[in-house]
Picture 1 (cartoon, rainbow, N blue to C red):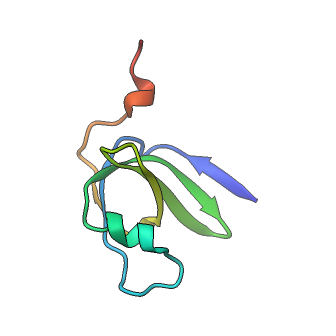
Picture 2 (cartoon, rainbow, N blue to C red):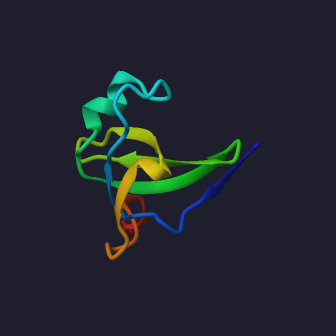
Length: 83
């Protein structure tokens, strides 16, 4: 069972996963240290995973505790822009 939460949508996030964490794949480490923005936070099994979008439109999931967040950032993503 999981729950979606979006109060952090649009917040700037820089992934900082611990080296060689078996919970992460190679793609997580490719995007480590790059600036992205949170699209949503999902709680699975009591742990919070953030769906982080990057400029190349790649989406990568990270544990929320492994993200450096800028909570002053503008909320929202391109999905929220009126067309």
